[in-house]
Image (cartoon, rainbow, N blue to C red):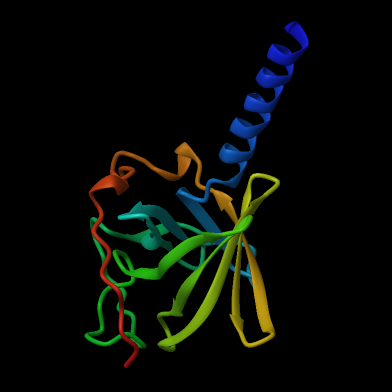
Length: 168
């Protein structure tokens, strides 16, 4: 009996670890491939059983946060209506399929829409945009508390309602 209870606790513990390790929701920071400096901070959030990704802040070329949902300034030229980058939902309809999440992602500069696959590996979010067999991976780091400050508060993603963008 003790062995069965012990095995049950081990099984429950392993299930909890796998659930936490798989979680994509949270704040993530991508890095510019060319400069190695931060590019944007994204909130991956759940709404009505699907996951979405919203840009909540963008960095300038020197790696300083200069655009946010609180003071948006740059516009997404490839998106219908030319909305601000900050506040834009550019990842949408993401659902768990096996051990990964799949949905859509848009390059807001060009208005191109791709299939996206997301998963957590080594505490980093892997974002893979794909067309047919061809794709590209980006590695996003968790956003740190130091990425948020008095002028850039961490928003409450539970209040977000997604708006799916349209290409120009």
